[in-house]
Image 1 (cartoon, rainbow, N blue to C red):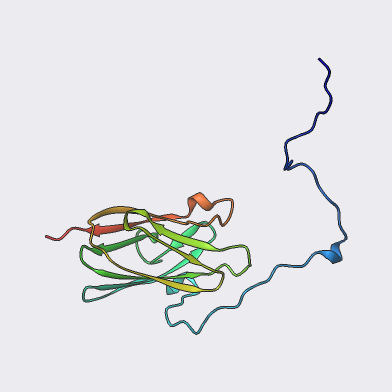
Image 2 (cartoon, rainbow, N blue to C red):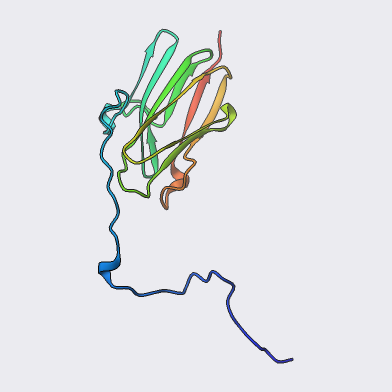
Length: 157
């Protein structure tokens, strides 16, 4: 038998192109969206506040971790009571254009995306007691799988 053609399957990751440096457009760095009253831009501002049966979480997403309350024993954990109305305000403190973060809580069927410099809010009632993983839903860096935490919903009684 004779080999007629031998070629790798496309796309072959080892192919490379060389271009002049002046052809490359640099990345965009986003501004802080300081018009959002729920935005926090450093770890020291992260906190979880209870107002009756409402819980406001002022957290940050940054490469490789969530921080919901820097002063807590576990800064990546949100602890609420069953029946609480939760407002999860999440600020992406990575400002370069390719670092979009997500936040998902599967058992609550929730997912949001937070662009660089932005703050988004998830609003839900914690009506299922238990321990639920929180995870980043957008590939954000080599340590993406490390970006996780937990929602702890304490049962009534």
